[in-house]
Image (cartoon, rainbow, N blue to C red; front, side):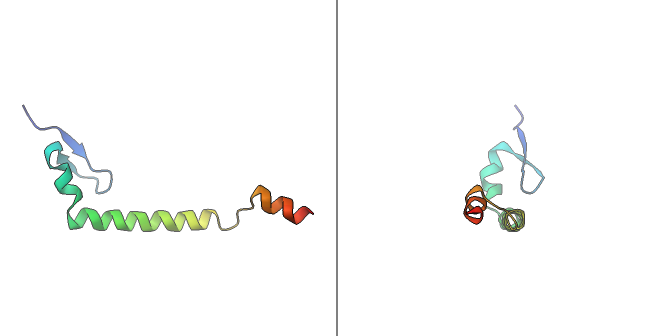
Length: 62
């Protein structure tokens, strides 16, 4: 029976299911993951940059 192929959602490559854990610990995967986490953090910062919470709006109205 052939080993199931999984697609790594970080690297976008197909890996054997039995090798998934090994793949996740490779320097290449870790590097891609770190880059994606950094990009996500930048998007989070930008999207909340001009955010006005209900509490801030309420405080400014009094």
